[in-house]
Image (tube, rainbow, N blue to C red):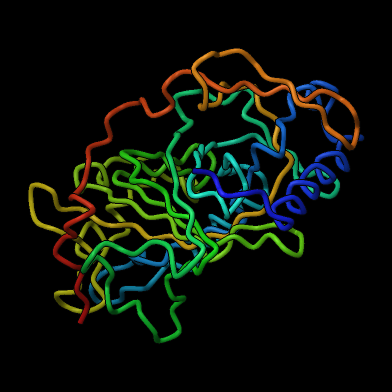
Length: 334
């Protein structure tokens, strides 16, 4: 049963409606306005900070092996800043008081706006959009890493800690597969993915904070080049200690599990910021397929959203990793 509408939830929705109206002039054409979704039902957050926490990346040889994680994270940051990477979490609804909802993870098209960045799923391949349910929590925390999958060598010692999302927060259901864009045309093929984050809605700007996105990459997938970084082909395996890269100390490895399902669990911290969201994709939620129009009280203009569509979870099989409920043999560092 849905929770009752509270004064706080009404405030959030009015803020979203006002924000959507502020950036119409001069940002996109009228086509963008015509496709704006109803912010009382849908809110979108673009990931503005994505940081690899575990494993680390290495370059060199066993005589001189250097940790290159900071350089890799800078590449991620530069691609986000240039709007080449626009991973956007679209939530239906934005209300921590509601027990559950639906979310799409969209490699959106975004441009700078006025008060808010403008983002859309227009011209995004529907096969690249992933849909998943999520649960909200108004007490305690949300989400946990897979048992024994974090390398203790990266805990403390000046390393950024893996986020812990405190309520109000949400945690997604397991996602079978997700291509997480790290740079332009560099999608990291993750399986057994989970996403969790805390809501920071008052005062504005509204954000998702203390976010974690993690997933598994089997060895067979990690060995395959997935694009170009620094003007050269990039395969995850070539950066992993215990994989194709060097080891900072003998026996040091970031490889999780045991054959035939060995690979690596990838953990990213993230922060995401509210954007003005324009959609032409069919959104899940009803069985009719008919678009619904809602009046925006700020502008009295109709905003059209479509409430159903094709299965957004389909796509190429990227190979699954170990069962999230059981964990795997952990990474080790010495």
